Length: 256
Image 1 (cartoon, rainbow, N blue to C red):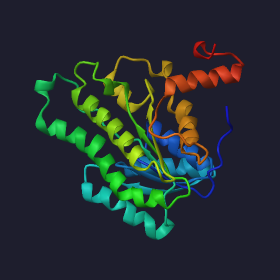
Image 2 (cartoon, rainbow, N blue to C red; image 1 turned 120 degrees about the vertical axis):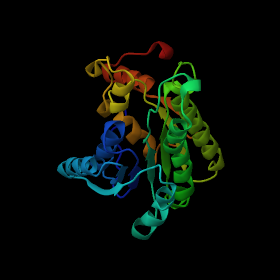
Image 3 (cartoon, rainbow, N blue to C red; image 1 turned 45 degrees about the horizontal axis):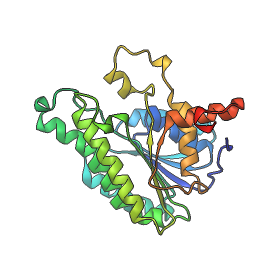
């Protein structure tokens, strides 16, 4: 596998950066040299992230943000531009699980909350940040999806619909940007030991799952200027298997 990309001088925005996959990715980006604009609802957790990034020799700007507030999301681009004049990397990680119940039992408020955070906020990020990503020599955006987006799991309705929408949103945007320097892709992380996963599966042993730090290098790979694919969905489980195969000198069944 390729070594850690050099992201010195690049500006990266990570949503949901206070814990889980977002936090691990933010730290990894900072270690690779990017200046990380970290957003989350929790101020204290962002401060902890900032301490970790500084201890690793990186730099960050903290942005306490509730993605339910559309006007605040719309203001992100105009806030970034005067200071940095561009955005090189967007990792749209933030999301909420919502209610796990039969669709007829989901309240309108619960439905609206999931759609506002998981889907509408990402559309607003696109509107606000596209001009800045176009100003980069190699703008890169990665959106988080889920296996639930297939709609094959009962009781996951709002979350499943929101993630299917995110996939369609990201792929549509990738086609619109085909003739630019911006590349847009999707990651399906699979089962990862996160707060959201623990909430959905409270009896699961999280130590048996993939850890957020295990897949953070995948995001580094996908936001590097050298990564030119666009409109694709990368399954972290497959990526980890390929990485393990390379490290052991073995071959995957698909490679034989």
